[in-house]
Image 1 (cartoon, helix red, strand yellow):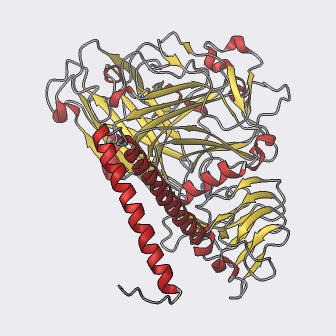
Image 2: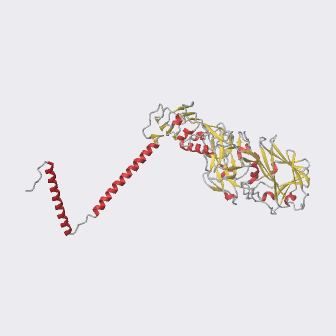
Image 3: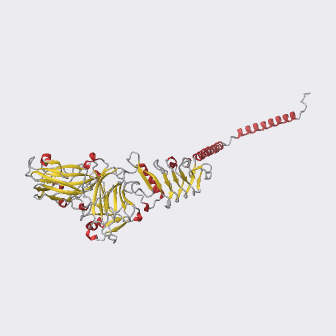
Length: 603
């Protein structure tokens, strides 16, 4: 499914995209990245902008007419030429799981002097959300536009990726990410499998406000535009504005933290009705969020102001604000629009009693989150990328397989798993790419059935994990691999598959290859070799202990070889002489006996 989201009416001729100085909910976790910016800075709304970071490639530039932009983060940009690959990303790491508000500023302003605005797609968390097609409208190309959405992050990092179309380089001027309440915008009912893409966020009866427009606070970082460009009336109706400085109850509360200023102004219509015509993509469903507050002190009871809400001509609700919350209190109501047949979504407020009144209106496309690659394969592929020194031109960034609207990483083929709940990698063709390094131990998932790594410069051993996979084709010829080939891997060719290991002089251990040295396998010592070395080491250690023991015993005896008293020495000497004489006599007798001498007979 191709999504084309041109949010032209949302953000032309606006200033900085930033947050207020007030802390955000949920620990104040936020990033404001000045894409292409060389240094950190602080904007007039006291928001701290970070220098460019977290990108996977590309280069920096500045707009051709910087004076027409108010703030530094709007004057610089990052672009991704084709030499950086077809897919490049900003990957913000170390994020807690939860819901995030993400806002981008996209600008061209002829930064490259080619007068050709680029065509490219943008995805968030592997789901295609924005599509830009050349030529852009002239005012959009000059001033740029902001686009925003709400998405869940569950893998500790937020991926905002850009996909080049033809030879056009994608561009981005700034990127913001703010953690928000996970229950915001009816997430409990909608679920986490949708991205809410902003198709219009309007304040009624006042000028645009919020971060980037004014010092008014919005704790989610949202900016609110005036509704005048999207509203119309019946022929006999009159539109007017109403405002108050009174405090409005029930604002800035969880989970949505809608700002008080939104409810302090309103648009009223005297007559039959007020109509909003919203540009949409008919292939999607939409979440409409209505905001009301009775700020007319003359309304003191129910029934004084009553009006109906019609969506594409269908009456879906009757509103009596005072009946719901009284006066000077915020009231919100939401409605999901499905099965559209037109690219215009019509919202009409039709008076029943008194003038119809509205404080604000939001319109979000419910974009189904695309299926993603199974997590363990994502980890394995990232390890493979780091190990093999994959060049930038191959675009190995973000999710290896998602979004499904685009091809997977270059050289990678994916398909849905049996339950169609995730993507799995079924084939890798990385041949003839001058790749090097060692093959990681995690290579070889169960879903992988074809692997072509031929004609590269891979070194080291073949990982044992390949032997436990379901591979039917393995091409590793003409590399620098060494060590013993796992027998299970070689058996692929015996069971009807195909394996080619030619041109790796260091491989051994299977037919047509030389025998491996004793106690050697997989480019190193085998298990038996390690055991033999361990036994030898133990034996050597024991022998060393024995030698040390003998030396210690001898030293101990020498330590007690002290001089005896003189009288003891004399007795010992006499005893030694007697023993020697006795020994000589016995020796003489034995000698005579041996010569068969006549026994001695006494006379």
